Image (cartoon, each protein chain N blue to C red):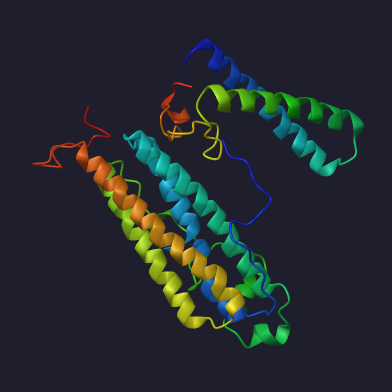
Length: 198
Length: 84
């Protein structure tokens, strides 16, 4: 069960509208390495995660990713809510504007809609945790790319916070993987799938 | 899980669902006295169940661990295991 707290995990206060920054940053809402996919990946992997502590980590990080989704939504909203038609017409954001005005819709920067095809739940602890570690690194690189494109410190500040969280999550998932392998046959980690073979 | 713990989880579930339902109604009926009175009644019930669970049994959220020396968030079965 979840409840909502009336606060962002990290504050967002952006004064200057910027359609190009919004177009890039929306990828972290609905893109292949975004926060929505991250949350759904971890929360759905929990059911077959046999180690109770690792299931706890998936719960806690999957929940934090929902808070990150909200931070990205707040950034995109504040970057687009006061745009002039002139700014929109001169930006590639015009294509998004046709279908969504300045509503916040989960898509990649390229316009590709959000899809669960961007993540996996394989039901095998080693495969799933290795995917989770890769996912955190892919999200970190995406934030690095956004930081290459965006100059405004009011936008960069929350993006830097989110980038740091990817590194912390990568670290925690690495510990989870070691925890899982410690309970398996050290001569052959792959002899069984502990989530399936009884 | 002992029967006292089961009873407290059930009290939390009942009071919380009543608050969810009343909250949805109150979102669009902000000043209705009967609904507000019920809301306050269930808010107290939820608070009591929450405090008893956090003090005597597993924490309800990871912000509620009261054990001073041990991280008890990951000790008990998760709700999807079908044991709670």
